[in-house]
Image 1 (cartoon, helix red, strand yellow):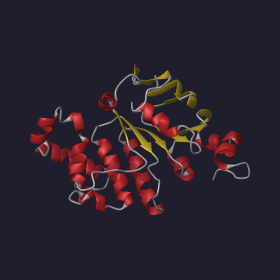
Image 2 (cartoon, one colour):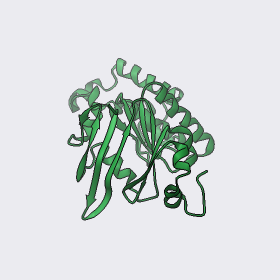
Image 3 (cartoon, helix red, strand yellow):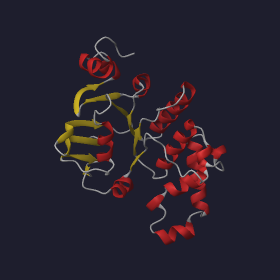
Image 4 (cartoon, one colour):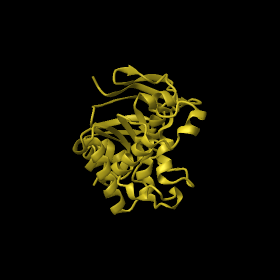
Length: 251
């Protein structure tokens, strides 16, 4: 049984088909890449998996259970967390408090209970452990808005980890980063996979995708045009034409 299985997923917006019968599966403790040109339907796919959007047709199975009828917080509680391409931490909060807020319903079942228990020592310890996992333990007192982009990306992942996910959806985690920054972030992603977290990532940096992912799914105008190992995708003529251009090859 696949850890995550997407079956014949279709999404229409006012007659425009953003996803057209997309199928793929993800094995547990693997990294799957989703690539494709702008407008291919990648973020729409993530929005459906995370419950922000409902599909027009098709279904999603997570650990054997259908989830595409659930609300976003229910999907998060089931073990799926995501990051966004544009990072939006609570800018005036410290790094530590950003992670505490990320615990959400898992630690704070109601608004008023959270007001009294927000900085309970056990929660602080857990937040510090998460920051250590992402290499940010020395920044816990820093104000989030003052962080460089690379560290904001790490904080975004830390906030997702606060939900204790078994599946992590990363939406263009390398966007805007310099070489040294994305090397560090790639190392973090590999480390999370080694800890047992299954990862699906959308990424435009082809070298990162080829280096990180065991399998890659390629979308074009909402249709899956290829799926396979990095080497299979790298040499697929449809991928070269749709994603890179006929005159170029995938590096």
